[in-house]
Image 1: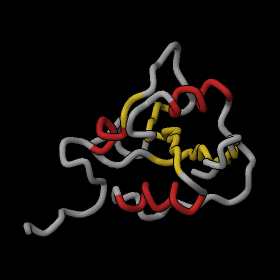
Image 2 (image 1 turned 90 degrees about the vertical axis):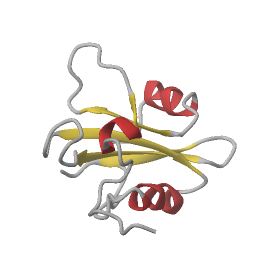
Image 3 (image 1 turned 60 degrees about the vertical axis):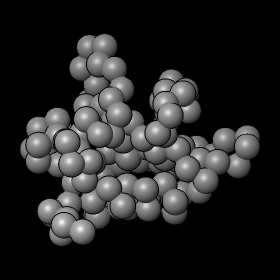
Image 4 (image 1 turned 45 degrees about the horizontal axis):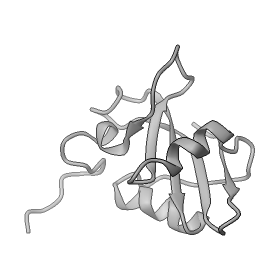
Length: 114
């Protein structure tokens, strides 16, 4: 699913919003979700998602930038990573990224034991 954008904040950081297909075991297999990431720049925002196992994450263009309400939500969350179903149904609240990725906190293949 394509769609996303970013907004540069006055302090130089960015908020990136992406529409992605949810991983299996998250909100539902393949259900679209809107993910918000707060980071120092666009590259770091995408790296934060890739480090969680969401490997095929790209930002092409700025067609669907975050709304002011989305920016406020991600700035007030301690992790700076939020998601909710897209399109939004009723009054759904934002969820921390851990709720999307499951108990392992990782969306990719099983990690080898250390």
